[in-house]
Length: 166
Image (cartoon, rainbow, N blue to C red; front, side, top):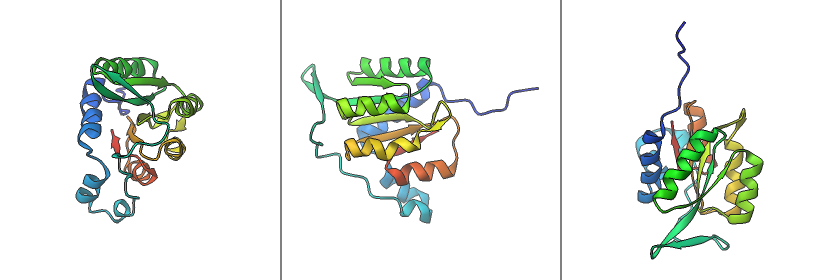
C-alpha cells in the first residue's frame, strides 16, 4: 500500500519563500487583497516593522545590520539545515526544538523574525504566536507546515503571523 500522507516541502522550496516574505514584506496585506474571504479581512493589521522594539538585539556583520531570528522546529535535521542556510546568508539565528525552549530564547533575545513549525511534537505552534508577539509586537512570524489547511492558515494570520507556508 502506498503512503499518501502529505510530505513536508524540502528546504530548497521553503527558504526562498521565507526570505522573500521578510525582504519584500509580502504577507497579510497581499493575502487580504487576494483572498476575497471575509474571515481574512477580519484579521488584525500587521504591526509596522519600521520601528524597532525596545530590547531587540541586532548584530553587525560586514557593515550591515543582521536582525535576530529564531527557528522553532522539532525536526532536528530540518532545523539544523535551515539555521545553517540562514547563517550563511548573514543572519543571526538561534534554534529551539520545543515551545518552552522557544519562549526561553525569546525572553533572552527578543527575536525580530521567527520561523515557526505548525506541528511541534504533537502540539500546535499556533499557541506560540501571541506569546512571541508579547516579547516583540513588531516580530514577523512565518508559519511552516507539511499539514496545511485553510482553517489553520486563517487562524495563524488572525493571531499575527505574516505568512503561512505549506
